[in-house]
Length: 323
Ligand SMILES: Nc1ncnc2c1ncn2[C@@H]1O[C@H](COP(=O)(O)OP(=O)(O)OP(=O)(O)O)[C@@H](O)[C@H]1O
Ligand SMILES: [Mg+2]
Image 1 (tube, protein in one colour):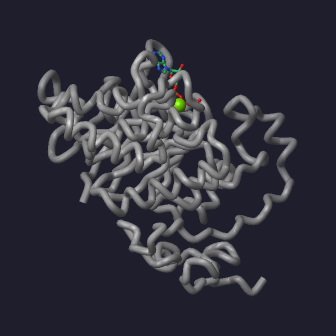
Image 2 (cartoon, protein in one colour):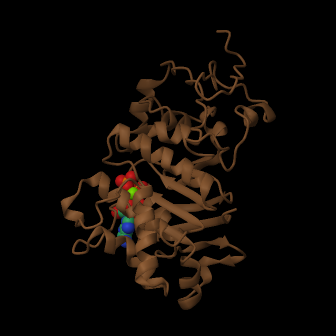
Image 3 (tube, rainbow, N blue to C red):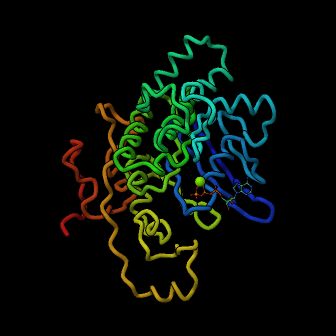
């Protein structure tokens, strides 16, 4: 069921600039995790470090018993085959058709014949809604289509781990919903562990099993979705509820005057925790858990109105919803 990725004590600097320090988290096998954080906190650097493109100063990344940080040459190349990556900018080759872009990893890493390659490319392009666009060049299509082509390319080698950097930036809300549904459906179908970087709060609240937040050069929190959505920790609470009141300012951290001006202002109540996005055909999500289970087993009362839904057929647990 996918593979677990155990990150421990990871630290990255570029020259004198510390990006993040002592990041420790475990991406559970086969689950969807989302990584959040203000712009410039090193989310993209984190993904590139996981796949071995950027070398950290300290720490370990253990996958199937091997520490990727220590691997070199062919060994690193082998472990990289476990990954499918959608980079933030899509990173398509501008002079190649979408077909050739998506076929590239297959031609590079496998000995499959062109007939089989063609079948796989068409299957993945259909999966991301790009059937018929195989002959187009990246420059001839919209930004959202480029994202989806990048996703098709990330899928062709049937990866164990999918790293996806801002799949929704530049997408309209309807396409964002489609791509979120695609992730949940894909996760239920293929044995892969997902890590999605996003700025979309709705995505973060409904798609993942786990959420992490990078802030101020460290990992502020990582854990089950319900843990972060019920958290009163100021940075987590502010970010996951897209509020202006809290420690995060326009340019990362607020200064003392700004914080003092806010003191005494009442925080809005935590909004209800939504249900997780179900699969489109009703099959269980890969890491399906009962709504409210984490809250119940940790003695946390979810915000009033949480997990209430008439569409997903799950009875709301609704503790404390009498307000
Ligand atoms: N190869 C590099 N060399 C030097 N500095 C880098 C390199 N790559 C990234 N950085 C720096 O690392 C920091 C984090 O960048 P990163 O792209 O990971 O941020 P991010 O969290 O993904 O932001 P955004 O949400 O805007 O995409 C930035 O200050 C960036 O300038
Ligand atoms: Mg980024």
